Amino acid sequence: MTDSPALQAPLDPEEAPIFDRVLSLRDKLSVLKQDKTTYVKSRDVLALYEEVIEQVHQLNEVRKEHGKPLEQNRVDNVLDDCFQLISLFFLTIGRNNEAPAVYSVTSTIRRLLDHLKEAAFFSAKDLESIGHTLDKMHDAVVRGKETYSPHLLTLLENRLNTCRNILDDLQKSLADLSPALTPVHERLVSILRSIAAANTRQKFPTAEVEGFRNQLQEIKGTMVNGNFLAEDSTAPAGQGIVTALLERCLLWSEIVLSRRGKIDDRFKSTYDKLYEIRNQLEKLTITQAWSLRETDLYNYQRQLDRVDESRVNGNFEDPNGHKADLHAQRTLLYLIRRCYAYIYSLIISSEPVSEALLPVFNQLQTLRRCLVEVRKAGGVSSPRELYPYSMKLNSIDNMRVDGKFLVGNDIPEGQGSVNALLAECFDYLYELRVQAEEHDSE
Image (cartoon, rainbow, N blue to C red; front, side, top):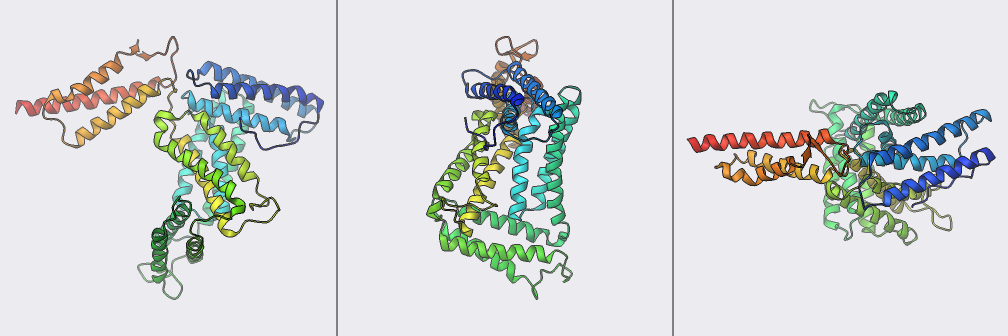
């Protein structure tokens, strides 16, 4: 298991037994995470969740009694690991819309927002997506008020509020940007990210980066007397935001072209580690439906956290305490941001279906896509052409017992999602069959 960032051990003797118990709980969660011989069961996750909450209650009582409710030591750090794992387990068992699942999302969003603030370039669309996710997470916490511990709910509300405050600050920084300049601003953000991505390719794409630089020169060429003009030839508000970003893009393109993807040797090991994590996460985004257990993201999160928190005052430093140059600093930060973005994408696209039902759910998704494509292509000429789809859907339908998909004697989470998808596929099939029969009768 990947270690968490180190904090001092608890000094209060009364916290020592709690520390031992939460360490034991983290170990149990880690063992459950690593066991791929069977699917994760809801009852196992809920039992561990209750044990963790009991330790939180005891810890709060000890600290309240000693007048130090804001104490932070390794007990809190290990509890963070426990909540992170439990949150990912809730996604694994298909309980995505319940309060505990919010914890891992807020962790990733907080990291993303901090990096966006530090990088100082982002588009309004980036912020809208994160804002929408925070709204959904808030709704999940509100729904959980009658079900889950107030200790957990207070923790989640504080984490959501922290994320919302950072998001508000970022949105305010774009408040002066006129809608007339938004397309230019979004294009510059896209080009800057594209150059950063090209900079981390295995084989440096010189022609591609030169093409981006030419696009930047073309954008600069549209300026009149140092301003970008609207259609009515006026200079819209937000010139400083866009011109500063343009200059930054031009500088970065020159630096990248001069370095041709070669990182400073002092930071090569960190680069290689982040490069490998980025590639692994990228593959997961392609094969997610078939190969991802959400708890697998835990180790990636912790590895990234360790690298991110190894910086000194925001800077990467070599073993001798010398700061990284601009190219190495921006390249490493880009890879960290990209990795967190992949984790965020994987978490929010997780389906509310237990991993036990994912094979059936994925088959139905594939069938639905096929039936939709057949419909788009104009349907079929004969009902016989629909037999393969009909046989497969009926074989899945026959797996149900009293309308439920069972695994052994268990009823995994996500029955509603799977049944709704099955019904949708049958509707498409019926529609195509009626269309084919009408075609035959003509």
